[in-house]
Length: 211
Ligand SMILES: N[C@@H](CCC(=O)N[C@@H](CS)C(=O)NCC(=O)O)C(=O)O
Image (cartoon, rainbow, N blue to C red; front, top):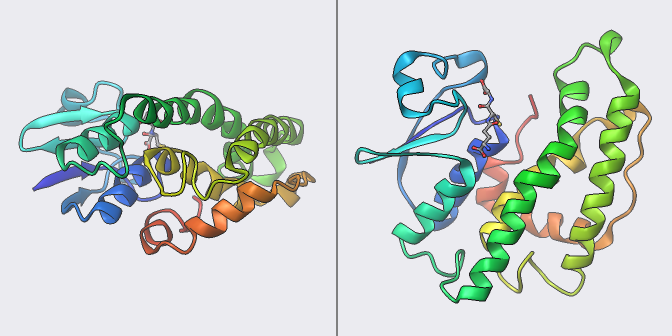
């Protein structure tokens, strides 16, 4: 059976967990990373030299990078509604996935670390606010993309929603008030987030305490 290494609190691990639940792909999950350790041990590093989670083992085939993992699983199981085969439709899904990793996730990192992983007395409030503002400006782009669409690339969810829905949960649920930052109104983004929140797989994999 497919093995997924990674702690459930990791946003990148949540991508394959959420997608497998949506697609009905059975898997076994092994805790790794954070308080569970294991990801710095030689056996893990032999699979994933980055020492990061997630990593999968699919009958001996090892793969890391969360976006690559969900694309592989969607292709292997022919989940074409989530990962279209039509060239341009697929390219747009990949565009938003890459944007999530290269733009959105880095923008949110300082706020996540500052608000969740740093004791209040040591918080760099300016860095948290700058992170909030940068994230807001990026999510305004996503808000424009979502205007008139139910999901990122059209009327049904795709891997683009998987890649972006994880950090959207954090956007709406980080304790921004602790840094005096107010999230701007982004109506299409809010409507999309509410739509995601009706999906049991999203609720189970993503809508959990942020640690
Ligand atoms: N680009 C990688 C990033 C992986 C990553 O940064 N994982 C974090 C958790 S979200 C990690 O392993 N942190 C160390 C740890 O959990 O011990 C991916 O998308 O898989």
